[in-house]
Image (cartoon, rainbow, N blue to C red; front, side, top):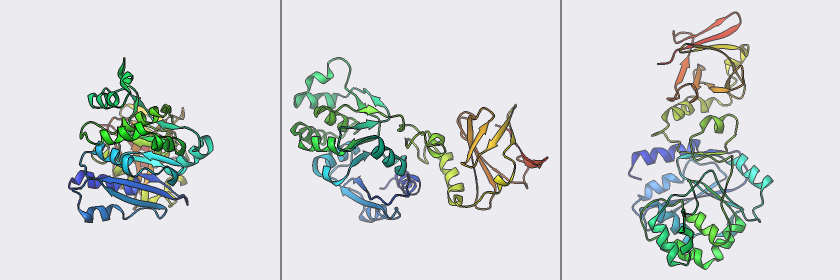
Length: 333
């Protein structure tokens, strides 16, 4: 991991990538390239939850798609887990609620493979491999489906894939081509054993942070990293360590006044960290800093830049008490 951007992603992935208070065992495999330093691989194993078992698999490949296929060719063990999740390091997962939903609403003994969004991106490499192993017709007309980032696959499907000769041929051939993405592979393998990937409304390939962090509409989100969504990580850095404190903000009445640019809106600061308007639409979230200053993180509906405001009574940024209410004035730039 010579890239500082990737190193930071993994540090954030350890700290913020999972909401977890499970006793169940979670096994995580990281597919590493052959040129990673041994000390970097050892660092990767440190700093996780106690119920997380971390294993780094050193592959002979540098390209990520080849590394993914190398795992399915050489390490897949369907008996080792009920559910298998393929995800990127620039993601966040509420692992407790996700496993609860999978176990209550689905059955790992049945044939399930799900994702957030299905795409049909054409690939000459995929087309030629599929033709070679007997699936020429898949590219007649539009290209076959594949997931964008996450796959969740049941044990029953993984058993079929493991026992399928064509799947093994596909993984081994695809491993030889260091190009494009690794998102096609598992969807193609499932289709080879007559299982068709479907989309689930609790998985998102996008950085739907408020829907993930506050109301749990999404249990997995993607494309969320400090190099792309830095404001979100600034917010987490400010507030995550304060989760167990009782914030002073709740001592006020739950009726506040927000002045955003030229709009004036009555808002509520809810105990679950939501900031909502009179129509109960989420405007953003709030929290407290280590010094117990109020922070406001505004959603995309207010500003495409997701601004964070740290408000205290010593500044003129706009917080004061008035008639028993907290009056906040925030003016956009």
